[in-house]
Image (cartoon, rainbow, N blue to C red; front, side, top):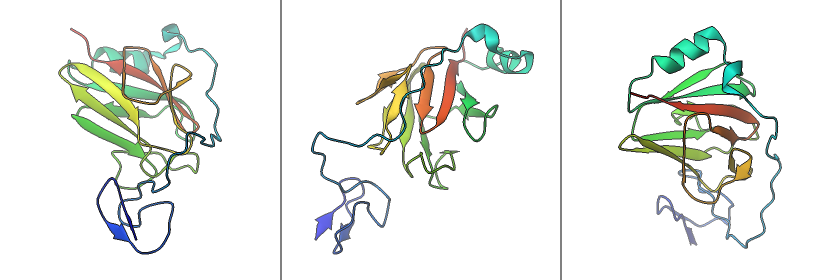
Length: 160
């Protein structure tokens, strides 16, 4: 009998993921398999199209925008305007990224005041910020690149 560390649900069957919430039940040994490497292509803010640049400039303080540069929904925009925004392949995630390189509950964005943070949710492929694999919450600033699975996104926050 194992107990999910996320939701507390007990499961009689040995499994790698909780059948209730999808959280990983694997014991972390320090050795993880990463399938998707970080993308090392640089993005420059000047590369934004006029429509995206206008959307970024129109952001109110306390909200943020993720622009997808690469992935199945390249060109998509995701508004981050709540204290907690979840990202994953699970249909109930706030940002739904439908690709096998994305875990069901992959990452989360949190807002504390006017500062946004991103953290990995123990995903298989990890979450990267500016090409670096993160292992805890990372504060984001305007222009940071966040990679979730094969999706590369640029983070913009509203400014005064």
